[in-house]
Image (cartoon, rainbow, N blue to C red; front, side, top):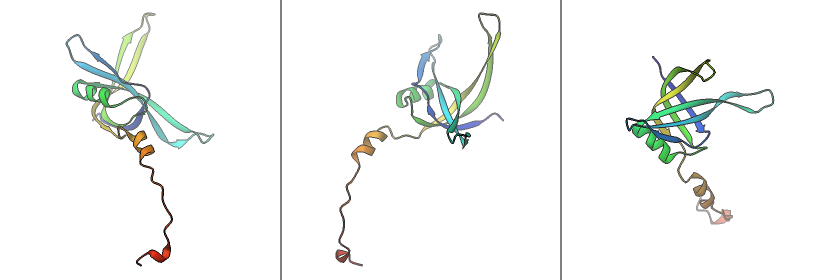
Length: 128
């Protein structure tokens, strides 16, 4: 079985292209934090290239941008090609089958607008 799941943040805006057959394909990368920190106490992340086809790719392009937090489920795929210098190059990608958007679209603006000032309450006025 070839299945993987990641939660991470987009490292740049999604690139949406169309194949010669008219099929949309989105490409992006995500940074996924590891469970541990390095010797300096800094977070360590792995970076994964992701490909999403057709409607899934269109939705990711439409609703996500650099920094968006996403859940990606898919398959690992490796392919190779011959570079101009004659060497063989290998690419490992996640082919997304599912994506959930984990950030609220207006998360930052709502956080700033929903801050409520608390006023002190006199304990004697409480009914209990």
